[in-house]
Image (cartoon, rainbow, N blue to C red; front, top):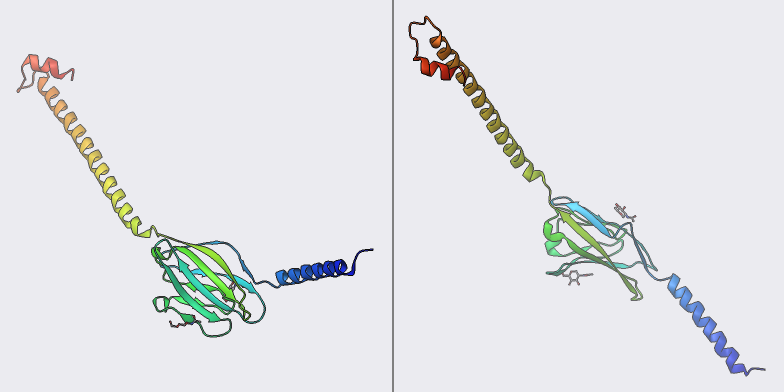
Length: 198
Ligand SMILES: *[C@@H]1O[C@H](CO)[C@@H](O)[C@H](O)[C@H]1NC(C)=O
Ligand SMILES: *[C@@H]1O[C@H](CO)[C@@H](O)[C@H](O)[C@H]1NC(C)=O
């Protein structure tokens, strides 16, 4: 028979295990549909998150890139948001913890970190990547002008070739007529014999 304290210690272990499991299932979860968001310059990006936790959490969004780290907004879900001055007017906070940034610039590319903090102090982070892409529309007029210039040049060259060809035929015919025997302005025989073969 085992001593009573071993049984007790085993029970304590089981209790501890149950506590851990419960604690684990009660942990904060942040679900995202994708870790990368791609949006064009001047467009807007929605960082959509689905938060599950105990009570009403505080949500904080931070921006982090190679060159800087910046707070964007913080709010208690359901309350009004505290938006950092430099993001005022182009950041929209949603009641579900999601964030929308509009009027995007290339410098907005980087990591966006959401921190969800419960009343108890438990917190969890989640990182999302934003990739801001340049719009190619600005280059299209330039390309169109370039193609038009090339086409005009080609048309002009073709016209030149056509005119030169006409001119050549006209001169040849004119000379051949002059070479015909009996023509008043008969050209020297040596020249005529050459001309008939060019
Ligand atoms: C959160 O709310 C925003 C705005 O209402 C919505 O566009 C987005 O889909 C929501 N996200 C989730 C995961 O429900
Ligand atoms: C809101 O902004 C003020 C000033 O920028 C700051 O002191 C405060 O800590 C912010 N509140 C939260 C919840 O981040």
